[in-house]
Length: 307
Length: 255
Image (cartoon, rainbow over all chains, first blue to last red; front, side, top):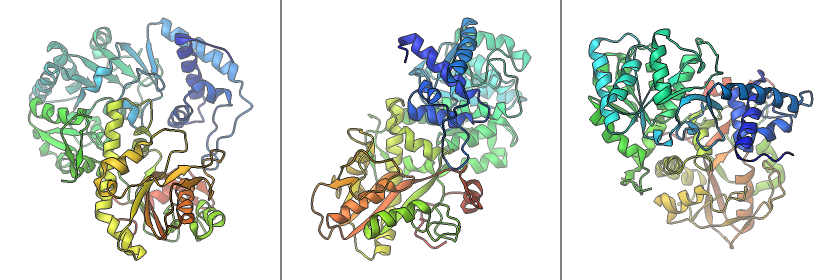
C-alpha cells in the first residue's frame, strides 16, 4: 500500500469515501456505518466496497468495480472542489462537528464555507416559519441576541423569516452563527438570501450535507433539519405551524434525545401543547430561560442519584 | 464530568422519546430474544445457542428496548463507547444509558426474580469486551454508576478465546474468575445482536456452578432491512410498535 502522510492521508480517505457514496445502490447511512466501524473508507473501498444488503446484513465484496479507478475519479473531483475554496469534513475527521456525530442521521460528509469550530458544541438552533408575524420576528431576534451575548452559537437554516432574523440578530450582537442549508454549498436558496449566505460564509460558517451543486428537493429540507438538530445542543422553535419544517425539527430533536424549547406563544397550536408534555420539552419566554437549561445539558453530571 | 448531580428520572426522562417497546410474545416473536421469527418456535441464533451450549444458556433473557439500527438508541449504544466521539458527549451518553438501566431495573428487577422463582440476584456482572478494550464503559456503569447494581457487582468473567467469530456461541469464549456454586447471577450487556456473547457468558457462569443466570441487555439490536422468507423487519417492527413509551411495562409482562 502507499504511504500518505497527514493532509494527503485525509485527501485520500475523503476521496475513498466519495467513491463509496457515488454507488447509488447503497444508502449513505449504510456507507457511514460501515466506514465508521472499519475506521477507514480506503480500506472499505479496497476490500471491494459494500453491496446492497440482499440477505440480512451480508456484505459481499464486489469484484466488478475497479477501486483504483473509482478512487482516482473521486480524487480529481475532490481536488477541483477544494481548489474552488470549499471546506470539506468527513465523519472520520477529528474536526467533524461533535454533537452531530452522535445522531443516526449524521451525514458522511459536510461541505462548508467559513470556519469550523468545536466550540459550536455550545450552540442552539433557532428555527421557525418563513412567513412570521412581526412579533415573532422580534421574539426570534431577542432570543438570538440573548444567546449570542452569552457566547452561544446561533444555528439556523438560512430560510426566509425566522431563520434569517436569528442569523442577523446573532451577528449584530457580535456573536457567532452557523447556517445549515438545504442545497449544495454552491447554491443559494432562496435567492433573496444570497448576500446573507455569503456574509455568513465569510465571517462565520455555512454547512451543507449535499454535493456542492445539488438543487433543493422535497427531501433535502427535512434532511437538513435532522442535521441542524444534530449539530446544535438544543432547538428553539419560535413560530411554526404543524406542517412546517420547524415543527419537524422539534420532532427530530426529541427523537435525538435533545431538548426542545417552545416559545410560550406557540402554545396556541395543538401540536405544540402535545409536544410540551414530552420529556425534554421546555416552554420558555426568553433567552434567559434557554440559557439556564443549556448550562445543565452541556456539562455531564459528576454523579447520578436515584432521587 | 463536573456538573451538579442529576437524578435518574431527570436523565432517563428524554429517552422515552425514542425507546421502543419490546414485544412480550406472539407467533412471530422468538421467545428467547424477542426478535422476528418465521415458522419456527425459536430464531436461528437462539436455536444454535441451544445446540452449542445445551441447557447452559441463560434461564431468562430480557431487554429494555428494541434498538432498530436506524434509530437513536442504536446510535447511543455505539457512541457511548466510540473513541471518535468527544469526551463530554461520550460521558453524557454513558450517564444516559446508566440512568435508563438503573430506572428500568428499579422497576423491573422484581419481574425477573418473580419469573425465575427466586428472591434476589446475589451477584451482578457485565460481559467483558472482546474487542481488546481495557475497561469497558459498561463495566463502570454497572460497577460504579448504578448503585442498584454496584453493591452486588463482581468481575466474574474474562475473555478466554479471541479466535472466535463475533457471532459464534462457545462455552469456552469466557472463563470465570472464581467458583460460583449456587449463585444467582444477573448478567448485564449493552447490546444483544445474536446473543453470542451473553449466552456464552451464561454458559461460563453455569460451568462455574451458578444456579441461575439471567441476562438483561439495554438494546435488542434490530435491522429493519432484514428480510427472510415471508418476514420483513420493517413491517414486523411496525406491527409490534406502540405509540409512546411506558416505563412501567416490560417484555416479561403479558401483552
